[in-house]
Length: 117
View 1 (cartoon, rainbow, N blue to C red):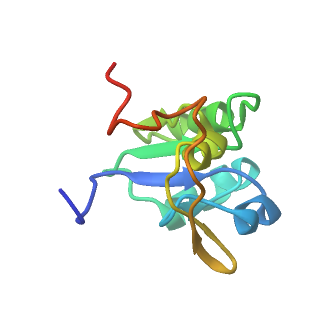
View 2: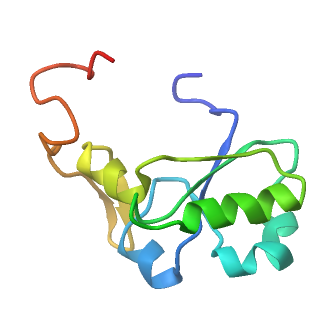
């Protein structure tokens, strides 16, 4: 639903310092190592979870997804992670507020609404 509940939760599995540096707006922060002891306090098993970490060079989102799946959560990974979220021009939050960067022409179309795939 536009502007409403997307029907899933986005989970940032990185460290506090990384989360503070920048994260997807509205993301739940839960480092992978804390998932077994804190997931049930922060997440509803009836709501799918989408995990992410830094980017394609990191398997943190995969490890977080496995930890959640082992606890019975429905889970998917956000391919590209935080790196590609920012590089494609989407808004992100820092401890200073919401920011955006121009889309990187190597990751997103410059003169079109979408990539056309």
